[in-house]
Image 1 (tube, chains in turn blue, red):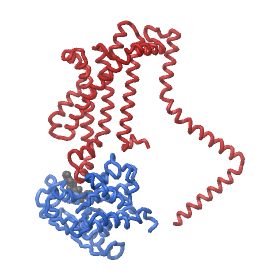
Image 2: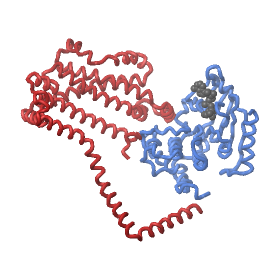
Image 3: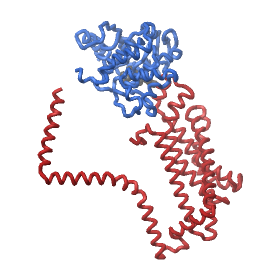
Image 4: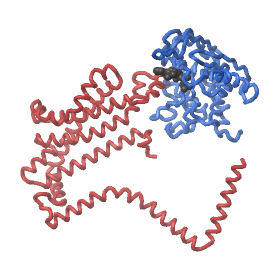
Length: 266
Length: 298
Ligand SMILES: Nc1ncnc2c1ncn2[C@@H]1O[C@H](COP(=O)(O)OP(=O)(O)OP(=O)(O)O)[C@@H](O)[C@H]1O
Ligand SMILES: [Mg+2]
């Protein structure tokens, strides 16, 4: 198993300790709390989300699962301020998403790297010039420091997603929203990326909301799994297992509880 | 792990096989000959490639010269290449030709700069702002359909046959392709990238510099290349119809005195200058779009 991991990955942990823990201060209050009250979103006459109440503690890792079209991305876009609720309120640390925007980053499924900027410039996108060293550090943290001068198009799918993760990390955000960031990756790269995301989250101290199709992924990463169904939160399951989590009976039990709940309606 | 071992074994057995092959002298010879040929063709291919495009023009020149020499083509209708060359030499020494080329180039550049920058600005406005788009894009799409050369009679009434008439005509000609391609280029930027840029906190000039301009650039450069062609065509027409200087005037003037060698020289000059400008545009594309898969050198 160990030989399957890329050579660069084994250095990840020490470099993270140096870069993220060293230069980006870790504080328990660093994460942004989320508070939703009565949030409703309709498209036309169809309500996608109805009257959602949700509280997420600072620094918590929340996974959102649900069937395709259940409104997971819609919820994420509401949190990001890219979309607005028809009713109800979204507060991030007491502020509106727009006010909280500087401390918020998204990692998209398709990476969304600028094809006309080199890898490092992509990571530094939106950073003030004085903060550009952070971009190098973030790139280092995802194990791609040696690809800084490459065009995004020559990277593999997994490498592109690592660059996208570095870009999300570089601004030292308080909240990261991940919309199926690993959906397009092969199983092995997924595993690598999952442990990478877990370790940067543990060191970064930010709040994380991960939308995923993969219940196993949710169980490995999340403190808490939310299932969205019929526009409401149908299941809110705390996952209180030690990290890093390996496949085993406890994890399988969590997975089957979520899957049973999803499949009950099938 | 075992896979790697297998791979290694495969390699070593392959080596053994090739060893036994090379023991036979014939095979060694054949291999040496093949590698020699390969070396030679490696050097020859790039040279042949570089020369290939000039084969057709050179062949045409030779045929033309031969036809003139045998009298199959009368000198009065079409002078032979060497007479055109002589005319070139003569006009260059008198300074007439450089003067006319300079004048034509200046006109082209001025018209392009004015029309191009206006087209870019309007295209930018329509691409970025819905208000601007609603305000004038419909009008632009309508005006775009008018062949700009149809304006010549009106322009002569307005400006006479002086400098401004020609510059104006070129400017009108290049305006529309650059307007349209700038507008279109901005509108077709991936919405996902714009959304991502917003999340990264980019607004105003930074958004323009990082996303909008580079995203629209391939389309803008298509417009530039197209506009360069139009610029040239417009200038030839304008100088031929009305003027007292420039390459177009030089050829028209020569026609009156039946100096067909100068007429042909003028036509060839347009071809050469046009080709040079296109090469420049191509160079700019390669430099500016190095990130683009269609333009990458490596
Ligand atoms: N901009 C929009 N206009 C109209 N309908 C929309 C819009 N965005 C989303 N919807 C609808 O809202 C519903 C939820 O979409 P959403 O993208 O949130 O689903 P999802 O849970 O993320 O699905 P998936 O897992 O397939 O990504 C879908 O039925 C979709 O058609
Ligand atoms: Mg989705």
